[in-house]
Image (cartoon, rainbow, N blue to C red; front, side, top):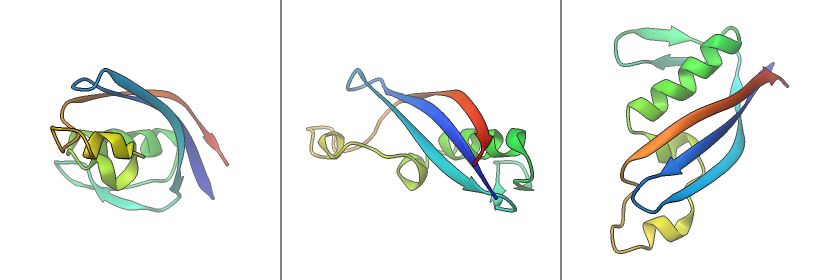
Length: 89
């Protein structure tokens, strides 16, 4: 079973916003910055995505446009994440 999460990711340095959907597997284990957690429902899946964003591992989960890496900055920089929807897929 997988959870589908639709999100918007805004790159402040580039004034660019992307919207996409990612899949999170049920039973996935992750570290949220304070403790080890697992994904067993929609709320856990959303927490997983927010934790990855908070820990700065954006390129690990989200699709980052190549033009951002090719820019003069060469890195992602500051971002904002907005979860639009989560459902079973």
